[in-house]
Amino acid sequence: TPQDLLPLLRMATRDPWLGCASSYQTRAMRYTLDEQRRLLELGPFAHELLADGRDLDPGTCEAIHRRARGADRHGETVRRSLAGNARTPAAILETLARDGAWEVRAAVAGNPSTPAATTIALLKDDVYDVRARAAESPSLDAAVVLRLLDDRRPEIHAAALRHAALPDALFQERVLKDESAVLTAIPKARRTIDRALWERIAARGWAPHLVA
Image (cartoon, rainbow, N blue to C red; front, side):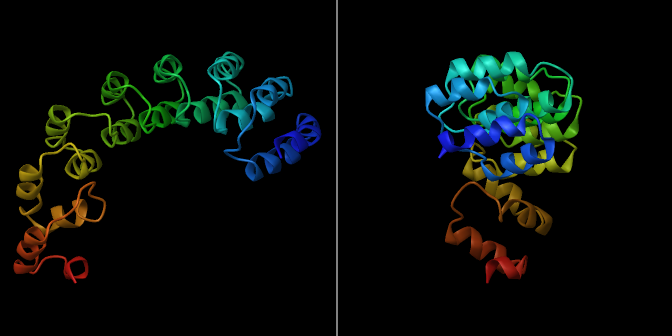
């Protein structure tokens, strides 16, 4: 149980190898509020575990964020975990969306709890990987997705084509343009592909391994 981990975590703050091992074994655990408060006092390795935890208390989240603002490796790891945690409050996600480490910003972009306005801002990020993650966000509406369809970068265009907010009629129109669109959109499409569309794809002789 998390209670049993406390002695191990105290050792982890002094032994980096043990700290790494324990963090891999205990990802996404549930901690009571009392355990969260106790773990906060155990140092950076414990903060990594808390940042990944489920049922993360907003107050604990804020405390971890304050302590993880440094440029050291542990600070960036903790911020990245907070950025990807669906329990992280929107205000902290908005701050992390401006983080100097692109991996942190990419985690914010991929977090389903990130507010739509923050995700839209990340679509303009200087780093392509951040923009690609933001393009997959379920918080985007149809108007934004339609604009992304014209993006010249293949991964962003593909994310828009697969997006659930893209109207069905336009999805079918774009998919039926060429076989590459079928291969890009169908396997990861966030919608049910109806039988009529499968038949039209099969009639063209496209992607037989998908139609079969």
